[in-house]
Image (cartoon, rainbow, N blue to C red; front, side, top):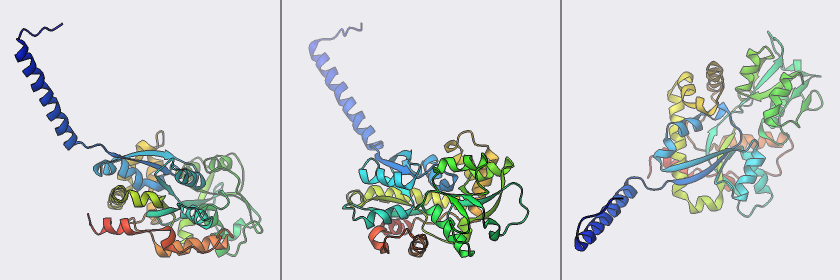
Length: 341
């Protein structure tokens, strides 16, 4: 035990001095490192398709904006929307089709999209076995392992088939009941003649000799407002500064991805895909670069949103047309891109 061999007045002075030093230190620390704003972010799935987001996380772009991101994976837009509307997350990252569905139901505090990350469907189309040539007519009378009915990947698949004169569920069978994460494994296990699925599952299956990637559904369908960050309208109104900083971090991620090679991107995002072969990761990223999957800025495309509703209507999944400004906003993206503070 340490004993102070000083008189009472000196002891009191020492205590006061120590308290002042501690208070000054705490004040200094508080000024240098203010507490970060926590944002609970739910991504629709974990996918290489969302590389700009992982770049922003890994390179500290969110931290630079004094944001602490709590990332979770919903495994489906319907799950992500449910989490957002319930208030269990602050930002939901998924396709705008979920936003359109909720708006059509008259939600009192609807989700509003405020930043776009992808502008093409991320699915590639694989034929079983080794294929030298492919025609869309080859799928007639066959069975495709598709995606969840009512989800954008499935609707885009149906759109592409119709563009080639093939009526889904009549001219070709499509399996739509499998969970997203189970579809590739089901195909690899022998189910179906074709599969529509995201990377890196497709590259992995191709290298394993399961099948041959014969088309990109994203390239076939064209630009569409595909994956967007959403928040409840009330959250946007109450936390505009947080949202603007969030968008700025995403924008930096988008810019970084467009300025670097697939190998460099892979080196940054690899921690989000533990156990994945680095060469497969690079190849998957390069496939997405080749179809211009990622937007250059976070601005939500009006044209892409209109095309999305066109695709939904063709699939019989559009309750009624929804005006862009009712469920999307570019207020934050425009401020960020224009460099406004």
